[in-house]
Length: 444
Length: 166
Image (tube, rainbow over all chains, first blue to last red; front, side, top):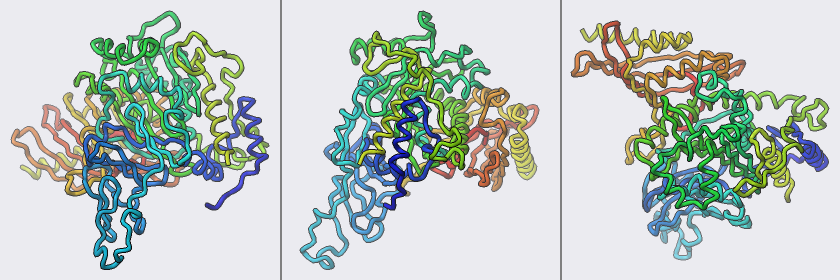
């Protein structure tokens, strides 16, 4: 890869500013930074591919992307999940262009080489007659993604064969994923397929918005306050804990009611009949946190975020789980993949209402997310000029991540793991995420 | 008779597009029946043998008159940032086929749509295109939209949001 070098002194300068709670604006959409991110972040960290409920039976497949690599994910006859580079090893043709389906054999449309669900080359047109008996078909199977693993039904891949195991990479995020994904018998299920759309912004900006930015809710989403859908108290999205986790991950555990007020329904308004099941599937501390929470929102670094809110649809409150993948398409472009998920064990009528709640609030048509996309675009558009891109920082092109800096201390009484700060109006996750970003792009 | 109905439906759809492009959303709501079912399922790329590429289980819009009214009311707030400053839209509706349904008060209308949108000083216009399957009902004060199903042709929507109506 042709490398646009960044002076090590410039990188040292970023570190110095971060230590002061500041972030140079030029790093947001700089093309040289993006090249480093492709190599040192996306190719070395665990990336989300699919949820197990999208691959229900042997032969089920979905096609996905790891940034620019097309990936084919299948369930084999043995029930195993496998992921391959979706490119024929013969001449590189994209093997499968459908989004999903069910098959036993994938046949390349170029020269007819065919592969089974285990990725083995099982058919070569004219075989021995043209390649001779010396062709070893075992050498020409589909190329597997180097690492594949899952947690609570979430399937991740890693292009780095030497990466730490997924469980270790997720660290204490697993504790919170258990609440989000493992609370119900049968786990969560994806409804339909993910919504996909494109926004002209940088992946770090959208990640950040979900990772640690409940502060934006009261202004970006003020229209819903004006309509009486969201509370008037400007602090409401700040009540609760912001939890800094390892490896750039973070979660906001938002109670949305002032301390001691507890005017929110327990267990995110999920049906009372499900509560004993939650208490059975979770440990006491997890159930305790879950019961008091209104919104969980956060990110699994670097490109997967989630949001589990309580949302109104025509007067009723419902909870759902929304995972979204931020697929970078370049320094100023992101393809968003957004999955609606719901407890498999929830009553069908509840699932339907929760789905309607999701459509009304999130996704490209959501009354909340419409405005997010406009703002994310504005940040990218205003961050590519000479002043904002100046690496010498001559134009005060430093962004403010000072909220709670040295002012807010972790709350040791919070039952969950991680550094839990007693407010979500805080830049603690952002600062930790940026430090992790810098560490990764500086690694050899 | 059918020529007359065809003309009325054409006028209805053109007037609807005019109201949307003119941001006269309250008047647009008046064109919708109180029991309207307004949906926009997802498009997927599928092998031909697997049938339609429409995924009805997931949508971009799954609306009732109440939820559409909420969306319209939102546009009237002071902080609907995606729509203030308002992008400019043009709804183009064509290839209309009108069919009378067994119930004489109902017609089916199939049309193609092309939406172009210009945001701020962006040089490239965003666009969205596909087909719409509508059912309209003749009521006391004229035709009303009873169902609208919008089928986009793109599997990945190239617009940053769907803050408009289709």
